[in-house]
Amino acid sequence: MLEILYRDDDLVAVHKPAGLMVHRSDLDRRETRFAVQLLRAQLGRHVFPAHRLDRGTSGVLLFAFDACTAARLGQAFESRAIEKRYLAVVRGWPEPEGAIEHPLRRLADGKDVPDAGAPRQEARTDYRRLACAEAPIPSRDHETTRFALVEVFPRTGRQHQIRRHLKHISHPVLGDATYGKGPLNRAFAALFGTGRLLLACADLHLAHPADGRPLRLHAPLEPDFAALCTRLGWTPP
Image (cartoon, rainbow, N blue to C red; front, side, top):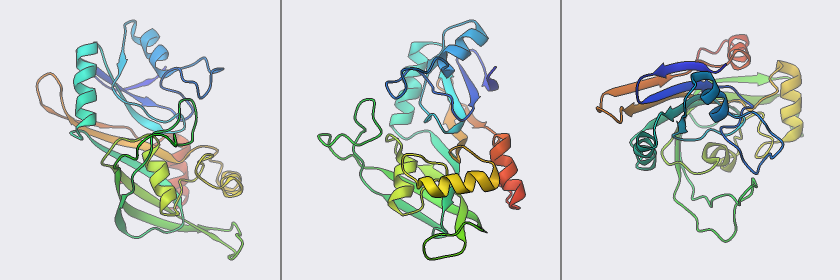
């Protein structure tokens, strides 16, 4: 069963685990479990996803109980009226804080590569470094590998935006098989026991689509992500 974070007459928020797809996709036609179907079966009623999380990303996933509410939520995401806060573990030590403004093309249908014929769209991601550490994982030039916990605020909503932007500044998310480094991901997973993408949607801040009251939807880190932070002495805010 999916963990319910919030529910009322109009919407429901769940904690999506890493590895679960939101709905059917050409990215994996063999997959049979999806958050939409699981939640419909759990609640015994139709639900409409208001946004998406990548398969490997865990955290807050928001649904509406009717198409009209889903449309209003979708418009709120599109107009940047909903604030999204993520936590990620990245390679290297990025600057204490910064803004990544780098246009992105949409991804080709069913693929993790940009569509060369699509126009570039503006995209901005703000971030703040929360903690740093080193691991005894040798690289070409060093005996250890640096990594950091960062707080990430995507200001636009492009496909794989956080992952692509962090790669753009040479600080890819650890565990990212598409935009990261395979040997480092495998070495890190073997050392810390985290065979997943280390990216989580921790918070959504929004105005309720029915009456405008403020909502703060929060998902705690999954046990493996939280255990990593504990082991390194990190306390995410």
